[in-house]
Image 1: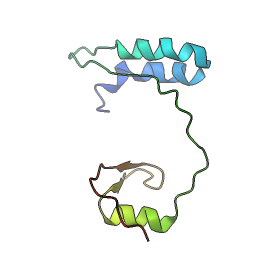
Image 2 (image 1 turned 30 degrees about the vertical axis):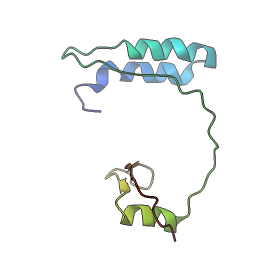
Image 3 (image 1 turned 180 degrees about the vertical axis):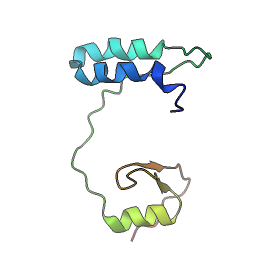
Image 4 (image 1 turned 30 degrees about the horizontal axis):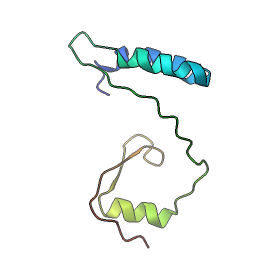
Length: 94
């Protein structure tokens, strides 16, 4: 997020993290109705999908994604923070 836009949304994140599951929808709706002073409107929706935890991607597969440009590591803690870019082709993983 750009710094000047983040303050409108960030106050709600701690609240969302602490909320029991039933209250999350109301918090997301609050975030979704946020508009900044410059007119940016926020879009938010609650994702209730259960995702597996502890999935390990082999280092060679991550390297292959980086080599093909699908994965871009961020400057700050790139081992944790990265962007996966869309691709029309399935990459060949080693």
